[in-house]
Amino acid sequence: MPAEPTTSRASFWEWLTAAMLVANFSWTTLCLGGFRPETMVVTGALTALLLAVHLAGRALAPGAAGRKFHPAGWWLLPFLAYAAANVIWVTPVPWLGWRDWLGWAQMFAVFWVVLNDVRSKAARTAVFGGLAVVAFASVVLACYQRFVQPDWLMLGRTQADQFIGRASGSFGIPNSLAALLLLLLPPLGVLALRRGASLVQRVLCGYLTLAFGLGLVLTISRGAWLALALVLAAWPVFAARGSWARRAGLAALAAVAVVVAVGALYFALPKVRERFLLMKTDAGEKTRPIMWRGAWQIFEKHPAWGGGAGSYNVRFEKFRPERYQDEPVWAHNDYLNTLADYGVTGFVLFFGAVAAVAWRCARERAPRQRDWLDEPVLAGALTAGLVAFGLQLLVDFHFKIPALAMACATIAALVVQRAWPGGEPIAAESRGARAGNLAAAAAVLAAAGFWVLPLYRAEALRYGARQAINRMAAQEPGLEQQRATLAQARADLTRAVGIFPGNGQAWADLSYATSLWVHVEPERAAKLGREAEEEAACALAVSQAVPEFWLRRGVALDLQGQWKEAGNAFVEALKLAPASASVWFYHAYHLGLNPIYSDLSEAAAAFALRLDPGNKQAQALCQRLATKPRKP
Image (cartoon, helix red, strand yellow):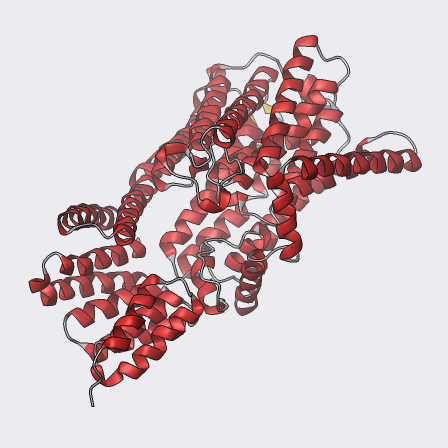
C-alpha cells in the first residue's frame, strides 16, 4: 500500500510542534524524568501548549489545508475515557487518580501529535535527533555520577544509598536511564551500519551507539540488559532474510555474542558481579515479587474495574507482608499495576488497543519509501527498541515516569506512521471544523490553567513541605529551627489546600504539621488538637481508605484528651494497614497514654519492632515503657 505523497519541507506549524516536543522532553528528562511535581507544573503547561498548537495549526494553517486524523490515535481514546470515569466513580484516592490520569493523557497527547503532525523528513529527523541529544546528555551526566561524584543527582538532590555505584544520569533511578537507552540503541546501531549511510552519519551514529552502550553498562540494570539480550537474540529470526535455518543460525550467533559480552562485564566489573550474585542469593528477586503479589491480590479483590486509578500504594497496605516496610508507590510491573488499578476492563482497553494497532501495522504492506526514516530495517530497529522497552516494563514502572512515557509515545508514533499509512490529506478544513479546532485549543488551555496546573502546583507545595517535616524529624533540630520549619510547612500546606482542596494528603500533612506545633507551644495543645482534628476530617472527607488519615485524626483527638475516641481512629487505621510498623507504633503510643493499658502498649510496640526492627521511634517507646512505673 503506497504512502501518501509528502514533502521534505516542514511548515511553520510542523516546526513549532517539533520544537515544543523536543523542549518538553528535554526539560522533563533533565529534571529527574518528571518525577517531582514542581517539574510537572512546567511539563503540564508545555504539553497543553503543544496540544493547543496542534489544534490551532489545523485551523490557522495557510489555506486551512489539512489531513484526517490517523485512525491509530482513536484506538487509545476509549481507555482515556474509561480511566477518567474510574477516577470519578471507582478510585478511593481521587487526587492520586487524577495525577495518574494526567500521566496517561500526556503520553497519549504526545503520541497523537507526533502521529498526525510530525510527518516531513526534516521534522521527524529533528524530533528523533532531539531524543538522541537529550539521551547523550544523560549519559554524560551518568559518567560524571559514576566516576566523579557517586551520590550526585539533578536538582541538588542526593542519590539513594541503594543506587550508589550505579549511574542514573538525569534520572533518579538507574533503570529509568536504561529504559531510555533501550529505545534508542537499536535504531542508532542500524543507522551506523545501514547501506547507503554517509561517512558523517556512520561516525555520528556509531559514536552515539557506543556512548549509549557505555551508559547502559553504567546503569547495571539487569532487567534492561536481559530485555536487550532477548531482543538481539530474536531479531535475526524476524528481520533477517533467507531460510529459517539461516535465521536460526544468526539468532544463535547473536545469543553467543550477548553471553560473551555479559560474561566479560561480569568478570571485569565488581559491581556487575555483585548485582548478579545478589540475583543468585535472592533466587532472582527479593522485593519485587512482594509487590507483584500485592498487585495480583488487589486485582483478585477488584477484578472488573480494579482498585481505582492511582490506588496501588494505598490498596497494597491490606496485603503488606510482615518484615516488608518499604513504600512501594507502584508495583514495579506496569502490566500488573494497570491490572490492579483499572481491572480487566482498563487492561484490555489499553493493552488490547496497543495490540490491535501493532497487528494492523504488521499486516500492512510496506509503504513506498519516502526517505531514510522509512527504510524497513530502521522501522525494525525502532520496533526492537519498543519491544525491549516493553519487556523491561515487566520489572519497572516506566509509564509512571513522564519523560519515559513521552519517549515511548514518540518512537511508537514514528513506527506506526511508517507501517500504517493513514491520515490522508483533505482539500481543506471546513469552516465549522476550523472553529471547532480553535474552540478545542481554547478548552485545552483553559483546562490546563484552571485545573491541571493548580493540581500540580498544590502537590508541589505539599511535597516540599512534607519533605521538610521529614528531614526535621530525622535531624531533631533545636526549638527555633523546628519553629521555622513548621511555620513554613504550615504556610505552604495551607496554600496547597487552598489551591486544590481535593488533595487529601495535603490536608493530612497539614494536620500533621499542626500537631507537631505542640512541641513549639505546648500550652496550646487542646486548641491545636481541635485544629488538627478539623484538618484530618477534611482529609477523611476526601478518602477514608488511607491509614495515615485516621492516624492524624487519632493524634489530634489525643491532644484534646479524648482518649477513647482517638482509640477508635487508630483501630480504623489498623484495619486498613494490619502489617504497618508505623501504624502499630502510633497505636502503641496511644495506648501508653493510659497507664491501665501499659501491657497492651508494650505488646503493640514490640509488634511494631517485630515488623521493623530498625524503627527508632518504636525502640525509644519500648525503652520508655520498660522504665515507666506501673499503675497497680
